[in-house]
Image (cartoon, rainbow, N blue to C red; front, side):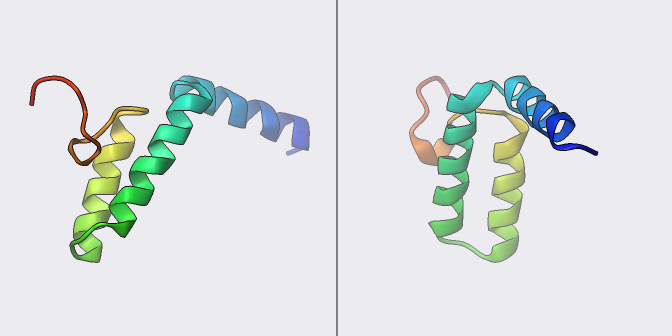
Length: 67
């Protein structure tokens, strides 16, 4: 695999998940989960759930909407 192909695949994945803004939001959410309280398995479950919805703010992040 050459670097151009790898770059193209990374760009497609980022675009598929909502762009760089969404990527930054996901990273912040994962950081908050990692720094938060709970066991490692609880954190892993929350992180897995957080990544299923790209760019969405989880309940820990003060999402606006009905819950």
